[in-house]
Length: 328
Length: 306
Image (tube, rainbow over all chains, first blue to last red; front, side, top):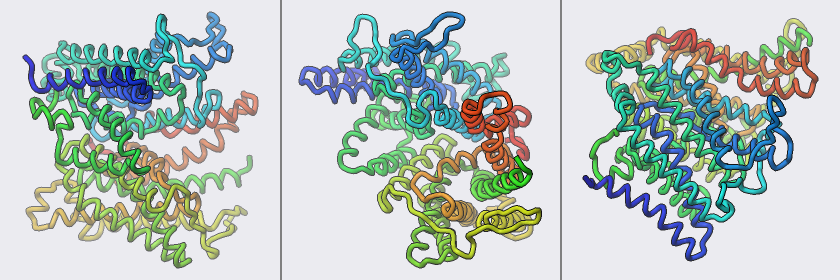
């Protein structure tokens, strides 16, 4: 059945495709890049939303996974471009400039980090969980700053965007297509996950932990699994984001990034599957429009966010599509 | 590596710990009494530092600057509570995180707009500058010693306030059962504003005191805020005693780790890689400490069942 929300979802995902296509025919590469950025940030938000919207886990440390994805790209590509082997044992590995391999490494390492951070943080809940995820995120941030082998505070640049078999990634519209397809796949995955037995159990653990335990499920395992999936998707977004900029720096790991990823989810609407798409697109639009008016545009962002939190809790989708269900 | 160096670093750790305590005390009080997580506490630290730098620039008096930092941060805190924070007490933590993150954006960019992006400088007054000789032949900066003493005095004052005064009784009662003390005729919303402003004033004072050692700039509150979070997670959220213990533990670990880990690593590494590996590990040390404490006590050293 087509509800207002699902119509709106289709409209958004179509708009995100049509705008860059129109820009492509009008030869406006900058707009394509903005749309690519929106798609990648939305992907990061889709990742966070699995923990936040579905699992009710308020992670203020997702920049850690975003940054790990970014550094996976930066480190592999830097070794490949400088012809310095990353390691020689047990086999010679010279780094890589192939996106699929980079994505795989980004996903594996951010999932591992999410497993460790999640296993420690999920021993607690509520405010403790928020502060601990924040603290672990900052730990990686300071580690990246002091890690001089990979640029330290200055970050790591690569000269040429990494390659994808059969495509020219330096062409903005082709790189956009990659980001867009991955975003769509992630949305399909998130939708199926939410309806799967696992997703239902996870949502139930958010609503009533005791009952979930009473039917023989372990909330800790459910949440940890969700946290790992969530971290892995955000890590993949980080690898793409670093490739978009051809640059990775500790800023990707800073807690402001965690806050921003959370803003994408909230601007759109918590627990709404397409919330991050709406939120990231709105954020990019605001950054572009207000940033042109004033250097201090984040004041307006702050005021808008405050108003949404205080008075319009459904976010953008909630404002347009109404309160169908507050949480997925 | 002499024992004088060790003692000096212990004093530095104590000084950092005292500053963290001033930050953490407000955070943990606000959480304990109102159940609110306030990310914008670092902004109040920044407000205090900027107010002090501005007043010191106009009047040249450090004492007036400190008073200004207390007043400005308390006023900003009270305003923040009246306009935004009091709408959040009944909301879930996610709304609190987002709204206070929004406040950070507003405060940071607003301060940048008013004062510009360049750091301001707040000078240590002449009567507090220079070293002082301590028993045992240690030369230690008088200003840092003053910070330690101010921190100790405030810690003692806070304990007395909570344990012995009428307001302290109301605060503790508010932690235990807010409906009950409202029923007993205490104006709970006034009490909340007061507690919030008190925490804000302490944060502002910490900002001003540290501002004279480091520079006063936008965003200066955030690293301290995150350290203060680590402090109250270690100490147990809501506990002043825990905040003091956590602050000293974090202050000591961070300072001593930063100095001695690189030296420790030279025992089995060449100096260059020992310096970088030691520095990397030292930057992560307090988080490792936090993780270790949480493994043993998930609700912190002095935490109840949170």
